[in-house]
Length: 143
Image (cartoon, rainbow, N blue to C red):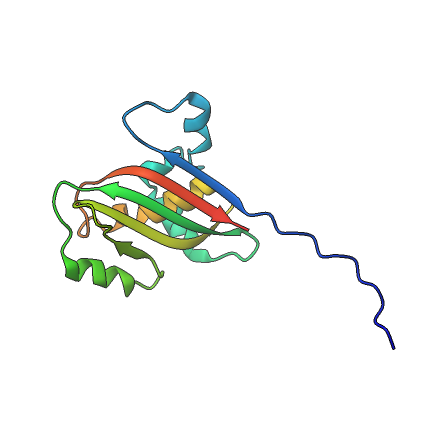
């Protein structure tokens, strides 16, 4: 007996939002797009967004976030390893370039700016990990 025809499943569109945060100023529209609901630029992080993202609301998008940043001093290898054991599942790695690091993780948020601000907010919340940093590039994706 043949199966009844089913309507095709709608394709899930992958959303990718990214920004290079170099020496040039962002336009007002670009800066507004990357401002979290608490008024902070996502590239500077937001502790409130970080704390809010712990709630894991399934109604919100699950964002995969990557943030590249630089530091004035190296982060000890033990600290890099400890981040992987952090309960939120964030990762902190060092690409081949000295003093450049990649912080990545998954968070639930309504907007890309909130997701990025939450992940970078982790660094603000944990100043013992990185005292001073400068975010150079951010990316958030969800499907």
